[in-house]
Image (tube, rainbow, N blue to C red; front, top):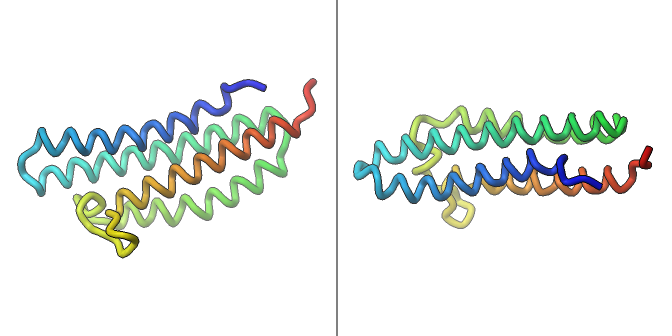
Length: 139
């Protein structure tokens, strides 16, 4: 078993975690709240789209090398069902709103909800990669 297939998903989780630290840095660096929200909003968008792309790339590379096309198809369909609405939801927000608007889910901001969904999806992909590696017969 190799740890190489896990790197894109771990990188996606790393990007989401770094976005939270970037937000704390932006609070100190940018005094104007409106400008800060726009900067943090674009950072949330960039890290989210990067996390989606790295998740899909890791999925195809791992399942293609193991010749497990049933896993690839099933996981791809599930990810598309999650990622397409998520990306449309992210893009539909005006500049600064991902960082400033609060949802009804325990006073979380929209950017936080997006980050939580992406971390959960990447952890599930890591679990799927692990299961696929365990079920794949070594050559």
